[in-house]
Length: 142
Image (cartoon, rainbow, N blue to C red; front, side, top):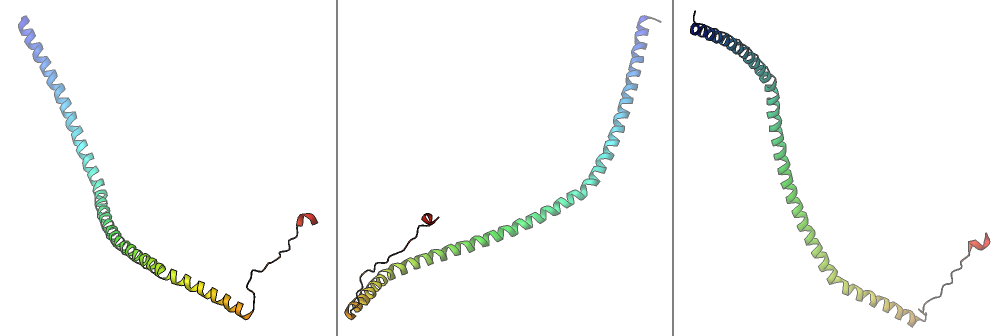
């Protein structure tokens, strides 16, 4: 056997060993992929009910948000009406206070003046009375 034949035989043997190792690696990768597919399928089976529940919750949340939004819009309209009524009442009370304050003050002054004049004509003096307040100092007694 010559050196060339030995080199070719050795190269062929190395190729066979390499292909065998490659086949072993590919078989292990195939087994791992089968195992991974099984795990993915079991994960899907576990998550399907969770996803369905999440979808139901999302629908309920959308319904709640729509209800809250319509309630908020209705409350906003009620609040706007209340503000308009408050402004109208405030304006009306301001007008009434302005319209009635001067005549009421004049009427009160006229009534007071008339009652004083009647008392003077009847002979009663309407001067200011002096009231003496008796105070006792509690510290002196103690």
